Image (cartoon, rainbow, N blue to C red; front, side, top):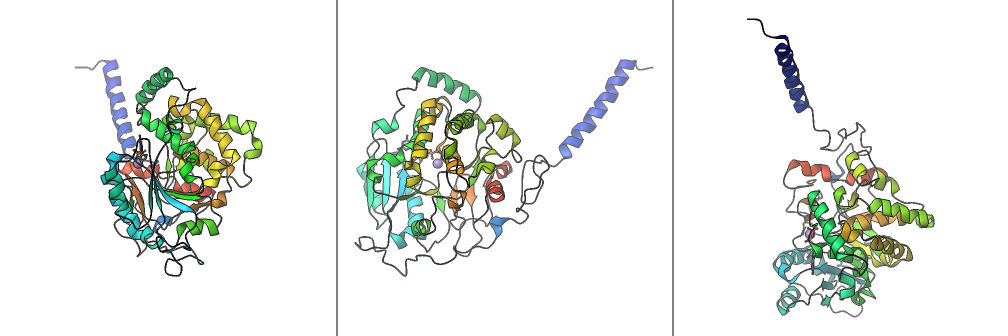
Length: 401
Ligand code: GDP
Ligand code: MN
């Protein structure tokens, strides 16, 4: 029996379609970038032929201040410590997640240098929290409540508009969109923490979050390193952000730059901020920003940068636009954009020798001083996480120094 023409045509079409789908399926996924592979648009990432994360590393070149050569006794009035603190914004309920982190950082580094710890909270710390944290360090611990005017939603942000915006953000799967405390936390970390009177006379801080891990013994004073090498900011992991959380952050930044072109540093990292080769869809959704940022749950930095007139003006501009609430701007992209535009890129340091994990990402150096992670490992969990690594772009545009 003869088959009707249209049916034969549809049969042939479905065979072609099946072959096409098989062909598509067999194509390599171009967006999971491993060193030396071809990225999304076919460009090869230069200087990324060898995995820098697997390079055996030691400490930075001498001279370094070591605990064995100087006085770092906890209470010593003439100690070699400089004006710096370990800094943690944390909730009372996170005590049991903070203690293992503190113990690890004390064991690998701070028990040799005894830098003080400064804890911040939007509500008073409990006695239990204070006693338990002080018990794991010889160094001095201080506990501070954040003033309401630093923490609360500012007066020019509308509660109603925030609630409406949060619905849209949730539809776009923005994490923590409806959690007002998360928005407050991001704003505080962006532009408020350094205003706390407890930090008035402090110059450097190392930010520590509960649950993070430290894998390597570090035997030199990292604050002294920052100071002696004239570094402003030290990072550990560089990631792509969720563009849905920051649609107007880059447009607001461009407006600010147009009003203050003189603020752009000569040796800026603009190319890193605007890259569109590796994750073009992020750049499009963020309206021109690569979304590449320093993952700010780890930062070792000089407070003078945040206190500068330039950053003050930039933060005020962003804050007035309401994006910390109407969108869900993180402090990581805000800090990163400011550093990338207004700071000398050579003053930003990759602490490759500090083995670190905040779920799900790692910085795991190849060094006998490290244990507990796999050298070169970047993530734990599903393999798509590998493509969130943005370090190759930092290395490409700025370098590994
Ligand atoms: P994530 O890393 O982005 O998932 O965010 P986290 O929940 O780890 O929060 C970042 C940091 O801010 C952590 O150190 C938290 O302990 C702290 N934090 C977040 N929200 C609050 C809050 O409402 N109050 C206090 N005191 N700390 C907070
Ligand atoms: Mn965290």
